[in-house]
Amino acid sequence: MVYNRHNMKRLFTSLFLVAPAVLGFAQNVDVQPLPSVSQPLSQPAQLQSVAGQPQNGATHASAAAVQALRFGYLSYDSVMHRMPDYAVARHNIKSLKENYDAEMKRVEDEFNTKYEFFLQDQRSLAPSILQKRQAELQELMEKNLAFKEKATQLLKQAEAEALAPIRKKVDAAIGQVGERLGLAFVLNTDNNAAPWLNPSLGEDVTEAVLRAAE
Image 1 (cartoon, rainbow, N blue to C red):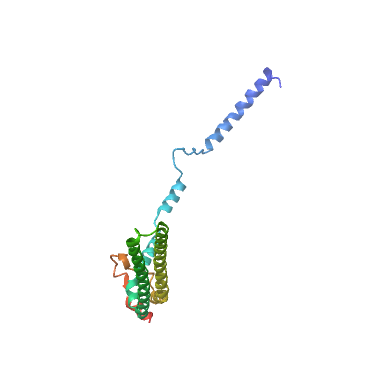
Image 2: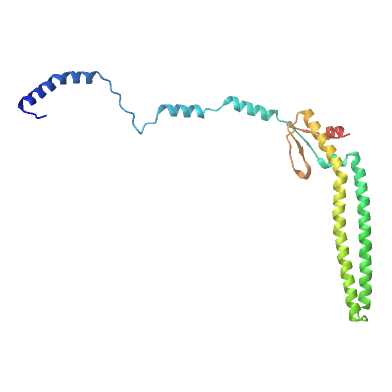
């Protein structure tokens, strides 16, 4: 559109008539200022305060659970030694050990005797015989060491097999006593595992376990 003098006059006249109405409308509008970036929002702060409040119900429940916690304690070795079958098992293990000890002493004495003869005769022996005697002594010594190691292993195995049924019976008795008394666990005090126990929370279950294991 080409603006001439006539058109410009009509445009200024229209703006003059509309301006008062626009100004009046602007005065009636309540414009709220935008929040400052540096000011934190109120809602997250409220959420943070709610989240930071302690849960009193959960705290009281945890404290009550700790106060209600009870446990038992005993010396496992002491209970084992007082079991009726323990003495029998120990007697059998002792007898087996004596047999192995006697056999190891016999082969050791045999080696010592042959070694003494070798020392006495080595200067008069021919080189081939000397080497033969040395090989015999070396073989005998290796066999004796192998037998001693094997005997130790067999003795430990026999001890474990003899005590296994007794341990199983004691473990079952401990479980029965713990369930009957409502204990959280039963502590083994051997090897100074618990130098001190609170008597208001713990209970000595030695006699109860021995009765249950009968």
